[in-house]
Length: 373
Ligand SMILES: [Zn+2]
Image (cartoon, rainbow, N blue to C red; front, side):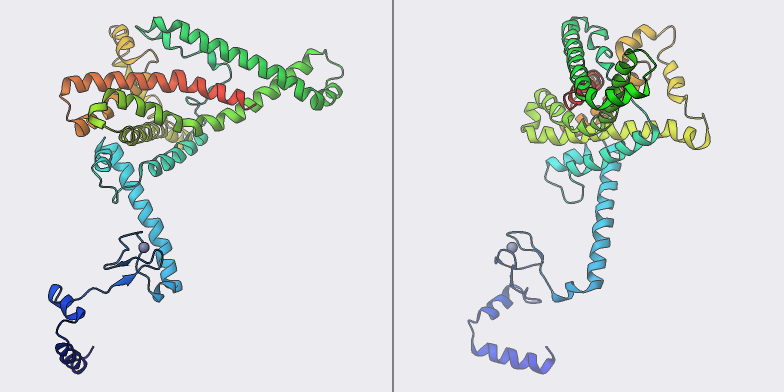
């Protein structure tokens, strides 16, 4: 509006003293906000965003190609910034993003499940590229990593035996069914190929096929079934801190962040150790964890370290130490725990989570893979 029009406009307005526009002026004298009608839910609102459904105010100019490109770039850089920032905070300030999420500050950070999906993808690519198998059990692994081998957990022997036996039975049953099923298509072909060798080679041929199929499937499932750990760890967090967490949903957020931290920790550690070796054949970092762990697993301290940090020298100790440290700082931020009960809780949970991942989760992956065959 130019000056003359404005004068005319207000002189007309004074004629209608109780005009709604005039009233509006007295409340917000400088710039009366325009009343918008939401194109999505027809709610009437002031401001830039519909306060009913969250739709943004629309202008025709937003249909330009320039705007489209701008918005596309914005979505990616914005998303990337958020995810990178959240992941960095997950590593550098344990429990911080969880606390922010729990007190309702959610916009500046990537959502817990977004973080987990991105980190899981990173983990997937990393262990695929480096060919590391800590998370990928062979079909024989049902008979390894017993819980009862841990100091003080000998009483778990019956549980270990039950798991081992049921995996063994499942494997035999599936192998038999598999041989029967594949016999028809492979035997004729194999018989021709192995016509001059004894019959057990045909059997071996089918065994090999079974193992190859298993290996293919287990490599996929071991990396994708990890989300199963989230509700299980959340249940443990909820049991231990039910008074402070109040809702299982809160425990789920903490658990999602912790499982994401674990995958990051494992991927980064593997990367630091293996990538210089893979790229430059440099052994600088290759033996580093082993050397560091000699501090704990030398002749004098071995018994103490086995009992305190676990029996898988280095591997388990590194996990228990980093899990424990992350949980310690997270619990301090979230629950304001006194350092002593915090130390006990974070240490014990670190050990429990290690057992759940490397003794039980791996066996579940074996079972799931066999079932799917
Ligand atoms: Zn709306």
